[in-house]
Length: 261
Image 1 (spheres, helix red, strand yellow):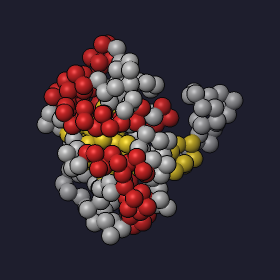
Image 2: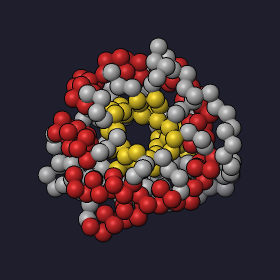
Image 3: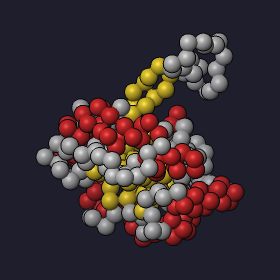
Image 4: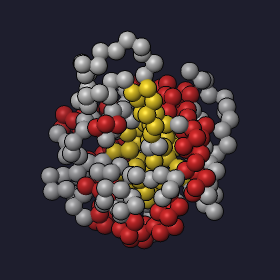
């Protein structure tokens, strides 16, 4: 049994955030535009989610899709977004900056970590895109990051289990390691057992149809044609299913007194 296992669910809407909490997740990572791998959510969404849930709220800080090497103008946006997340009551931020050679940009990461305090800082999967994962572990420890989200440098955590295990060993308890990417009920127990991670990150998305009766199927407002009339949301039962498969029933949900929007 894994009673001390922590589940973070990646969400991009208020409905998904509340479903994650009701399913037993201990933390959410809040973002927007998951089709781009996630970008910084609006302050309105952060505020709405903070008012609706009592579990930990980690806000993604990523000004755009694509790589993780940022201009000074983008860095200024990230500074402002970190401050906005703090003002809206986030418990933590997830961010990651690489230099042109694929190494952790320690100076910029340290600056944002200091600006974020006392919020917790997670390095997101920019880590998996870095040149040397084990040097990156040491660099992130040195700048005071609290957690690393990683798939072990592979497309999915299931593919990266051997490297994930080595990363956990290298961290040696000095920084938390959270496994993520492709984690589902059918593989979570094996990943946890083989790697020794105590935290997992999952999206657990399901597709739901739009309630609209009138549709213009021939016009697309986004980059993925044919996706206008469906949304991907977190379902409470899928969260419960994953926690049950991991041997952890999560946090029993109750109204802890926050204002519900």
